[in-house]
Image 1 (cartoon, protein in one colour):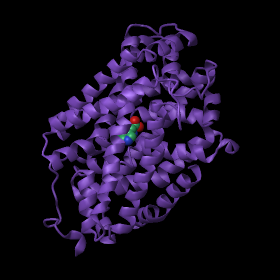
Image 2 (spheres, protein in one colour):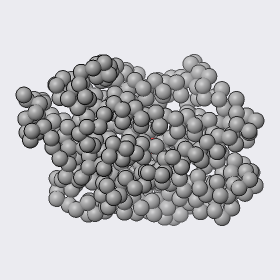
Image 3 (cartoon, rainbow, N blue to C red):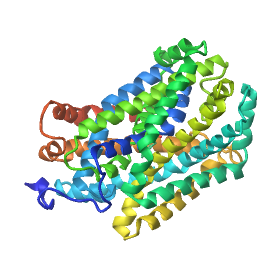
Image 4 (tube, rainbow, N blue to C red):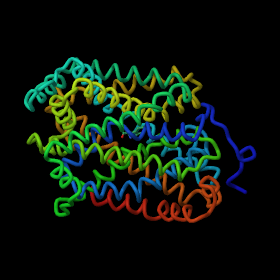
Length: 456
Ligand code: TRP
């Protein structure tokens, strides 16, 4: 049979080793999914897009589009067992289509580099907030003081460059250590610990006296406020938060043991990721209303509301320091996923060692990130298309490159790969398989196309 040609009896091996267990894979994918996207980005994007209706569209996108795309990525990755570029080329040929499918992998590698270029800048802010928290800078601070601290720091391009550099160095360090030793260790305690701390914050938020206002803002849809621009933002956020559409999950899937259920693993990750985002919203918005802030204030939202809350809390210094440490870990484990496609590609295609590849890719990203560093100070007034350089890189990646990548990936899994190949990876042709196939062939691609067409 065509689909099994060259599979050495059906089972390829990855050059980079494999996850030690099913749990390790779930943790790694969860680690990549849970990050700044949930805690920093989700609340501010939801705030800018009016709340309720946006959140609902986002949830629909996660379930109906995100889930089938994630399953497609994992199954393609595991079948190819190479970096996303080589995997798409190999499977494209193997399934009787074309090696040109490698372009999907290449766009993904580029998207990962671009995303990390600004992600690292925000993660750098988080590092600085660990230090500021520990120093007690937010104790008893009012809204203006917290704003002034934020503006004072982000307005200084040297400090932002420094923190961006530290974060990139941390990322390169772990990536260089490889799949099992590097990536797995970090996520084991990070996600559970983050969850516990978020619940503590939730308790505080519930007691803020404005909890229901926050809930209302998040869950009461004002449909008249929802334009196609917001729908695209919701779709982009679904892709961003689940780490899909750029081959990262494909790269992780390449290290997945043969007997793991792709459906089960995807479901676990999607649930964990969505819960943490919703939880973040439930923490942030009551604080916004309790302090008379503007939910649409933008990228600084979390750095404004949370320090305020911590500043008024008993034991706030400890909680605040701990929270930003955990958030830094969450960002760190996501950063690993963002560079993995590029690193795996350099290793396989150009025979670099993992360390060399990590340094090369890391330096490139660091350089690209300077555009975003300067967007908050020296070049803050430079505005084109979607806004500053930072805004443009964010818009281009989340709202265009990821949905486009996801579109091509589902089309590949749903239409190009033969039924036998996909059923083989998804564990037979039962009901869940049929559901996946309908979503991957019709609903997800058509949904993405409709949103992209209407919004652009
Ligand atoms: N999901 C990450 C977050 O929410 C960000 C992200 C987007 C990502 N694409 C990725 C992480 C690919 C790893 C791999 O913060």
